[in-house]
Image (tube, rainbow, N blue to C red; front, side):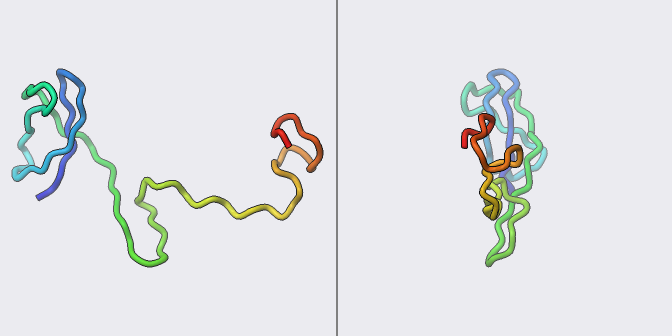
Length: 85
């Protein structure tokens, strides 16, 4: 039984609902309107182990630290007004 995302045409509330029939559009839990429509959902999955999760909406890992003394690519490591270092 899939969980689908819906949006109410009257109040704009977005909600998720477990449905038994794919063609069914449940009423809005906020205003009880029957004018709801199914939204296109993003695919998300979780993998086990150290495999990267490319389908996740989690933040990407931070890039590796640079070995140069400069904190930005626009200066040579001195006093730079554009990056504050």
